Length: 324
Ligand SMILES: Nc1nc2c(ncn2[C@@H]2O[C@H](COP(=O)(O)OP(=O)(O)OP(=O)(O)O)[C@@H](O)[C@H]2O)c(=O)[nH]1
Ligand SMILES: [Mg+2]
Image 1: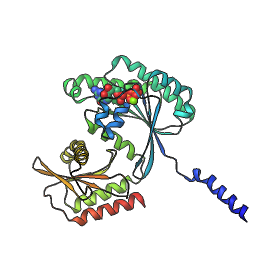
Image 2: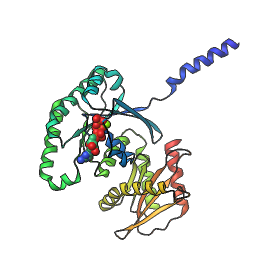
Image 3: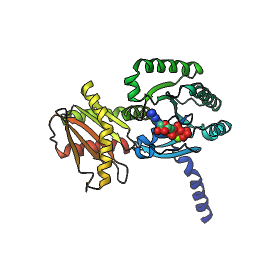
Image 4: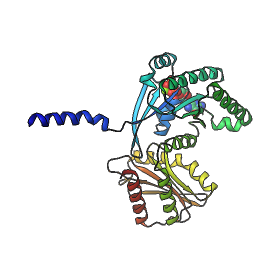
């Protein structure tokens, strides 16, 4: 009898790892100095770390939660010696990738052939491993100053680069984003779209946010997680969309700094109201799961009047969707 029990416990234990859902693997790769780690740190709003960044040594792995799903983010240091070791050991580094982000520094023209050559190497690895994750190419370091100062040149450069990348292989699932850490909203937008593609519940979240916006008579609502990822939004019109997208980084950073000073005693109860362009921007932190990272709401409203129950109701539906 005792033996039986022991055996079934052993059996159960053996089953455990299989029963666990493996984390979704997101791979950041590209040449050294492309900006991979900077992008990751920007999303964590660790801007002070970006200034003193050194090259990533080997593969750095971080696990975080996105809408209740476990994500394993792999940042593959891009120096040549590391690249060689990844290509020699593809099952360790490339296998299981569900989303690949390939970062290219568009400012470093002499290294573009090298960037494309390594991109080909990565695709070869995926083919050999028989996996077909979507690859998102970040045409990175397209800084606001360049966009303004050399608009035509930049446009030609990005068109040309996209062509070169597409021609390099016949990989099907290729998508392009133009990004810069000096325009944080480009990073938020790209990463939010990519992450939401993983998530079948996103339509439901979108609907809930739209209903909530209408109920409280708001022109626009954005819900952001602690990794700066937009999990859903509602915009009455393009102007609202532009205003909210452009202000999101500002409010996230402001909120981080205020918390850091420790002035807010009960951070979950408070909201921040800022008047700009004759409109009220309301920023509020909400908690959807105990002991879990917070979510943030940024909304635009003509009058800053609320019923407390409105937030409560909204948070409850979101909890149902995300964690039940
Ligand atoms: N101008 C500009 N510089 C950037 C941008 N993003 C990153 N950088 C700079 O590019 C340099 C390299 O950034 P990293 O994030 O360390 O590059 P990496 O791809 O992680 O490099 P490895 O770890 O060696 O693979 C740093 O000096 C960053 O400040 C950007 O959008 N614009
Ligand atoms: Mg790095």
